[in-house]
Image (cartoon, rainbow, N blue to C red; front, side, top):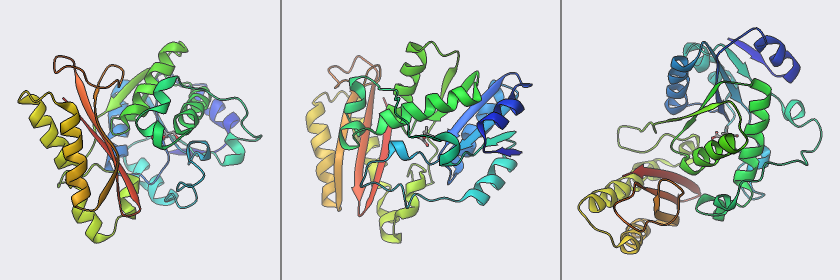
Length: 274
Ligand code: PAF
């Protein structure tokens, strides 16, 4: 695997390659990321990953400084997964001057996670479009765990007419159901034992919807209450339309339940499609 930090060197390296498939990450890689790398191979002949902890998408009180950085272990995992090129720019490489031009997503950036993380999706859309310009892939993969992110990036790519196919990878879970996430490493042993409750709540809500329950507000409130009884503080548990993440109105349209809840100091997100 070639490891490249400089944009010009990356362009030079990729200029001879066709069919580039790209998996952007912020590192601290787990089986969810590796599954995206493995799926990438089916969509092209050169797999490019990136590792960049993007300051622009973190709020002032978020975990930018403490976000786990495990570069050497990540390189070993990417090499084993058969990744061809790793783009790992420094902040100076990607933001040599203060970034003053942004990609501003529409109103969808202000709901759900965006309501609790102002500016987050603007930071994500900006860095991903910049990474797309550096790598110029024909396809890119993102995990479905970040459901709203995937939707925003898919819409951005379509509206900007970027010739890139956006592919969503299924969420990879631990045996007890907890969605894999770099932030799971923040959980204490007791919190880790409690953490699978979030997905169990989503599964129970899904079962109720499939059984015909259509009092969406009641289902959301019950889940928030159940989590609160076990020490969670929920930002949202929301039943939404898959198409546009607007609040669910009917059981006859494809729905998704999205959740963000805090256990101790750790904010976990998850979702389940109906
Ligand atoms: O999902 C992530 O890890 C990040 O938001 C991304 C897409 C790599 C942009 O920094």
